[in-house]
Amino acid sequence: MPTPVTAPVPTEALRHPAGALLSGAALRKSFGPTAALDGASLAVAPGEIVAVMGPSGSGKSTLMHCLAGILRPDGGSIRYRDQDVTGMSDTRLSALRRTEFGFLFQFGQLVPELSCLENVALPLRLDGLRRAKAEQRAAEWLERLEVAEVAAKRPGEVSGGQGQRVGVARALVTGPRVVFADEPTGALDSLNGERVMQLLTAAARDTGAAVLLVTHEARVAAYADREVVVRDGRTRDLGGGL
Ligand code: ADP
Ligand code: MG
Image (tube, rainbow, N blue to C red; front, top):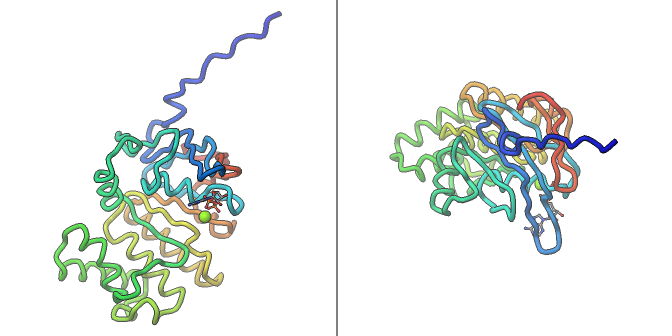
């Protein structure tokens, strides 16, 4: 008996699931001889919080940077809403990042010369908002993140936990549809890490932002709706969601 031929999977449907806000399919990216991504796929629905887990060096940050339009993949494709991100010009990519995405990193990455208030206002200023309006909105976000008292201080004058709350405010101030958070609690003690996760996820739920959350810690991943594991540049979905 010849083995039956399996019906081909409808690749387009598999690659970019219906209902996804942002999706990357079969992504490949190498740095010299190192294949950082080797066919990774990940989709996030509007408002969904997805934890991206996996060992150090497995390709988590590279995956985030590709999806965020910071790095161009060598292969595969990325869609945001109905737009093909992979084919966008640098100008359109940077407009997309500025208006639709928010970023939060392990060490806050705040501009050291600016006050915490000016740091939070910066994405709005880059978007053309007038200073008074931008700083008013930034002050509201600092209040919401329970760090109104650091507004006039520089990042070097505040604690790690405070700095990371300022980072959350800066990531959300423009009302992004997707927040990329790469090990946002990696440099914090567990109490501060827990509070930053509560504040980040509450703000994302309130504003309807989706979150792609890279973490090593199961405790942090517990805040997500779904987990995806990255290993050797490939993704494995642990069920739920898309
Ligand atoms: P993770 O975030 O999971 O720790 P990364 O995506 O940072 O993993 O890295 C995946 C692999 O790609 C690693 O082997 C890393 O050393 C390599 N890599 C990442 N970025 C670069 C780069 N800019 N230049 C060279 N190698 C890199
Ligand atoms: Mg990383």
